[in-house]
Length: 331
Image 1 (tube, helix red, strand yellow):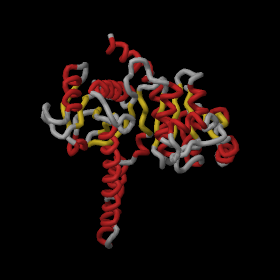
Image 2 (spheres, rainbow, N blue to C red):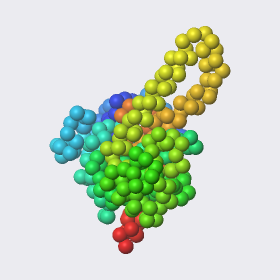
Image 3 (spheres, rainbow, N blue to C red):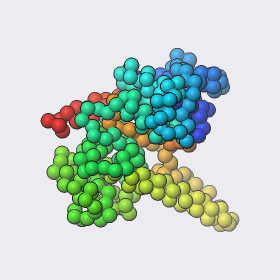
């Protein structure tokens, strides 16, 4: 496996990134390459006892900031951690890059440096979100704000492959996010996409309204990137609001505090469902390489889980399965 970790990307880089790498090495016995300023990475590594043969450092002088224009930064900063990692990925097979840095730069870099898999019209971001009986994949969550019906058909195929091979779903159900459950509801994009999914090689379950997401039977939910990004951020915001409100209410008086102590484990288990750190990151599917976008505020636990996610991506040969599937669809 060739797993590259952008040591300089994210709100808590490099210390949380390096700690997550150390935890992954110890738990999964995996070999990693940390990409970033060598001295800064070495200073963090010196704080830990770990198997030295499991972590390499690939030096990168600079970092791309969130405030920079993504495509321009990729071209102007060849010595940045993202670009150095992407350039090295092209030389290796079974390579995955994990970054909690600039989303725009990561997606632009993936397209400019690695390119699309032949036949893929638009690569897409796939996020893992909780539901009552597990999790589902939401695709696209922001890579493509404007879409055509055939893009959504491919998103469904990408999400299906990822759900089967990384999340372990058998014949995953596909749903289409819409403003109503009826087949004829929605705008022209969604109605045309519905017809493609209904007649395609999918376990298509039909339209899914936003209010039904937490109880959906679907394993993959498809939408354009504009809609998906709103759904993703609204879900994060509401989850944070509810959890904070529950804590405030419980801690507001003695009776609540006593009750809180009794259900502490239950609350912790419920909270885990909404913690992005549990799921690692969002894969950018459709490019010629594995790219996983970790949350900007990822801590060591989230990074460790993103590394586990990348291992499954490689072990189950997701990239080759996407390539083969696109060839079959074209045929």
